Length: 149
Image (cartoon, rainbow, N blue to C red; front, side, top):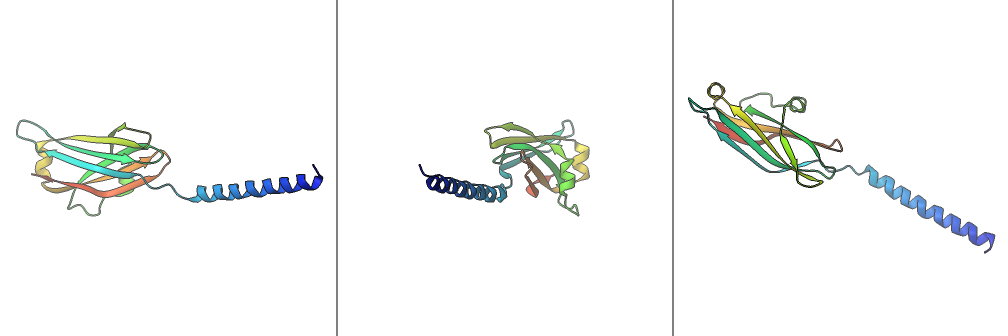
């Protein structure tokens, strides 16, 4: 093989590798989509004079990297200002069960006393913060509502 053929082959290889590297660098710049929250539901059971009630919130959360956690905050609709991400970071954590590498089903349950229900009747909202394993976040300040009677 001549020196010329070796040089041409080497230059062709460098060009191909350089092109692949540029593509990989561009692909690395594309941000991962934010975690998604689907299939939400909530159930509010009013407390009675002799028995506490409860609030249960469930959601399916999905992210390509997996889910690190889901934070939940219930608040009265009359609240101004609305909750912030900073508040949700400190909110109660839902229990999440991994369904696959990308999907988790999460459940949050809280006991509601009669005294609590009497203090704040009316419409309530549920805010959530999902954190993915890759650090991606989705903040939903009002993902669901329920009535406290």
